[in-house]
Length: 256
Image (cartoon, rainbow, N blue to C red; front, side):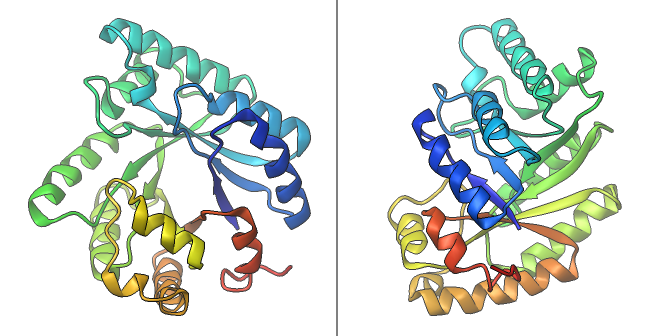
């Protein structure tokens, strides 16, 4: 089971470390939602408290877009170099919202030009759930990202439309057949549903029926998990509260 964690204050790391140890979770994505909370620092502290973690560090490029493009390039390069010294073996590069003038494709260019790809897997994000007009733009951006040979994985945005998911997988694998795929999936609990309903995440499109009840959301989650298994997509769990992950472990095929 791979779990995404969001740290808004470094004081939260201790609680997360205890949870990961108690639940024997070793595969962790570290989100990057605040400019003043460095995912590299979170990774260092978590790794010290819970040895052997398989970490994917999210680097949100918008947080490095301060000042000129040259400053942004230098800040991003330093972040990648710091991450590699942990050592972090996986980096998920996202533009963040709102997208800045320095965004994912610029960051990938920095990695290529500065020779930073050695010893690290680079992942990018992709949303297959937009309307047709925006989807064409998103597909073209993804195609550009996948021209970089060091991009070894794609992380799919949260969504429940399995037909759009199927088309996305076909599109991705028509370009890079062996690229690794990861899919964000909410843990279907009342707290997570409330979080997604009241503070919707940018680019997340969920049908109204998903929010009817945790039971309805769980049935839809089961269908999505089946589609993930069919298309060889590794789930990445998103949850409003850590304890909800433990309560839902059986749904995700994890023994507790």
